[in-house]
Image (cartoon, rainbow, N blue to C red; front, side):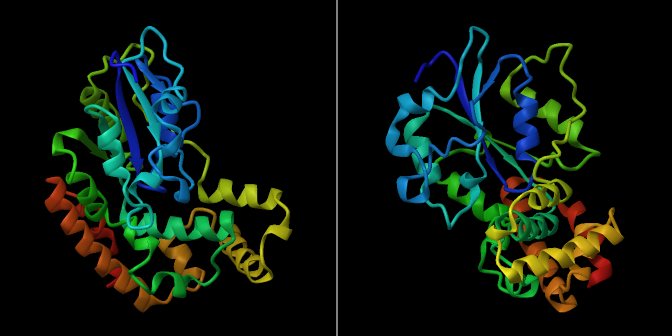
Length: 288
């Protein structure tokens, strides 16, 4: 690959604003984003990836111009350990001094959003209590930000990473400015720092897409569960994810255990990132 520009990767986390961030970065001068958001290049073949296609294939995913300083792609699969292993090693072996951007989010919100995504979009889950009662599953692994970063710290130093919560509307503008500074990109006058949140992959947009799809894709059990979700959202359109989960049938004791478990993971994340994230968890004291 050309050494005239650098490579940066948005590595996740899933349901943490990566689509919105990717679209925002596409409008920043000096940044060329990949032709499609998720190249899956650093996944191997059995994982549905494209690593075997080689670096020339990867380079072809970017339409560089004379102003390109950074090539950037975004894939939430890159922070889905242990389901997708080996990603940090492949990146380290392929790219010289890449920058890694890790978008994070309140882990309780992320886990619940992930469940509802699987219910609505994939049709793969129906029982919220069975899905969230076990901590050794994707809903908690992908919200364990310290676990994900630990895989990368085996190959990259802390200064390789930018970590930010772009879904915190009170801090998204500050995060956007800090990210451009991290990349060494000088913002032009037309760059708007007010983060424009994409309406793709939100609960409401996914419900709309689901309604447009054929129900033949989904089991009868999933269709009934989806119907119950529609009923809850229709009666309270601005309900937050915790209250929605409780209305959908999440047992209070499972929620409590979930909050306690994720609070421990936040403390681990603070220790490994050197950043304070306790603002995420204080709002849940009323449930404990």
